[in-house]
Image (cartoon, rainbow, N blue to C red; front, side):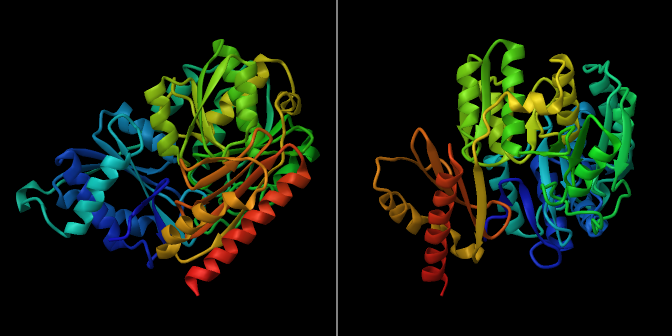
Length: 454
């Protein structure tokens, strides 16, 4: 059976790769994994969410477990409440930043940690085994509807107090943050102007991914209103993007490095965790702030587990998915935006000044589409041919895909964990070198895909 789980749960096109039947099988599998106990469920605003939720609930109940339906909430809220309510697992129906035709599921354990490789393998074995292990007629589970977002609000307000009267514009992207984020920010004393604040699973205002192109209206509104900052979330609000007070999009890598730098400075050093595709500016700021960088394969599951194992103070991916372990262990866009406000308030600087304190090297990203069943063969061929293309001495890392690097640049080629593509990322200290690296990577990947797939 093809592997169900990617770098962030199960994901695919609705009624093609992801169906109500699959949702029911996953519900039964998680019910069997926890032994017929209590499971939190929630969804984002996607039109297909109710359909998948029905399948998921059927599987959970058939396995003898009770479901606690939290309704439409962000993924990090589902993860936090799984632990806070003393439940045995959490299942979030979402495709995160993917387009509206996608949906899927993220699963969490009793501690609010995303399922790791061992749990994912057990889930896949159960799904493959078919409709087995169902409960008897008198042991079928039940459903409880619950609104518990107040616990999440209390948790954050109990740990963070903002004193500045922030004037912010928030682009909610018609996603799962629509109900919660404006309320929480206002409770913290912010003056909030909302954009795309109506929940709509077709995402009519912009794409679910808060990219620079998608946030052009947010940038204009920040400048027009003279706001202090613009904030945007993805479809399930586990990612965050920022626009500074000048209306300029803050690159994901620079935002991550700035927050990591502040976290190290606040703690007097420590360990930060980030994946293999994050900027080398992370290493620069760690050296400056008495810190250490631990690199992982791409995926919030990998980052979260490394944070726990290494006792790290902060971790994040260069897509706006940040983890603050003193709060909980799930990437949290809403929490991240509040912690960002707290950081620039503490240092008494503007957003642009806060970001300018870390290096901003050119990081270029692209991808090449390919049939998913050919990805492993393509990557195997690329591992043989990529490094020899460079005349200078290079180091090679195969932690996730293949990374060819020196002290001044790097090129990473890896198969995506969320879509049938090969991703190419290049970074250098000059724009020209980064462009040359990306061009070389694209050429090698495109040629290899044609050779194998044609």
